[in-house]
Image (cartoon, rainbow, N blue to C red; front, side, top):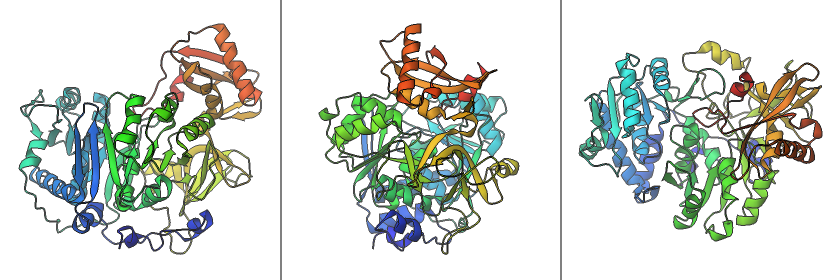
Length: 567
């Protein structure tokens, strides 16, 4: 019996309607992904490929599920010897190193709380996270800059609860690598090599409601929020892997994501292994489209997920020069898809990109499921278990074609379904007021604006605070940005509203030009006319500003609020 059959009473469906009505998950007590999935696979299919890893410098490694069990047991022993146990918050700053996988599994085995983080965090960012979550341990890459930032926080007294620091040594670093700074750093790689391969599950098991993951969202406004996920969260990503990514059992799935972001949990761990697929990881610092495209043929990748930006660079290459013969499915998320990208990728590969909408707080919420015909730019239809509505400001439901805020209703559910969707967050850690501000009366307010068409497909407009109201019109930034991005002169852009005494607000485009183009009044006019011809004329940007870069969060999201505040 396939592992997936343990959790799904029914795995195959005839239509979207069948899927929506009849999909359900069997949730066992004290579920722990590391033991119940990875160790189970190690026992039943130990030689099965679990992870294939390579980096931009030519290093390669591959691991079976039996090896992943052994490595995670060794990591669990190292952590236990360091005094880390159930409920301890541990921050992982491991980029795309293969060690991330056995270490996070080890933390799950211990019942600890994993806090994935990016290596781009500043001293202030690290200090904030240490204080907000009482972080007990940090395991990071052997990057002196990262290590020095952590030591700086410690020197300032901003990590009062931090009692263990360790680094993972790169395959390219000598074994006598010294982190510098103070001498209280442990070489986790060396300790793992020498640790016992036998680990016994702690007597005090985790419950399903225990905190397994804390994600600090990078929010485009305010300080990051701590999104709390429990131990059954991985089961929510069965839908992600099987019905959105459509991973191929025994195939190799690649999601472009740093381990510091929730996207990694979506595409590089839980659902893929539950579905029996191997995971592919490419560890790189500099994105080179041609190099990434070579991976498809070299490693026979069978499914792929990336944000539109990646595909935008792909279609500028000669796709006919690359081998996509193993690729069965490709999907996209992170922002709405420009139709031009969809069409060019389809022409180059024969594969229809399927879009998805979700948040760090949620799992796959809306999607162009296998039974649906893609409409480029649409988020698709709701996932099973998600009761989605679009609301006006007064709380009433919008009509077809009317824009409003996307909400998730969690009060009512069909027989056999949980009170809230599988994998939905349990609230913001240590911030009941913030939780109640977005989730009250059994309605979770996403903060995103959308509309629904006559076929039931949802279309993204923008963040609630980003929608521009001009001369009685509501203008979503995405449609204007999408139009601008079709012009060859535009590399990146952001659309915001600027107060105007006559119109209330006017549309402003902040534009980063592609190589070979220079700012001019003639180019401004050309871009304005291009938007008028591509979308409704009233949406064109009356103000165009050329800049060398756009302000972004550490996760790469454009900070429109900063652009608005800076005029």
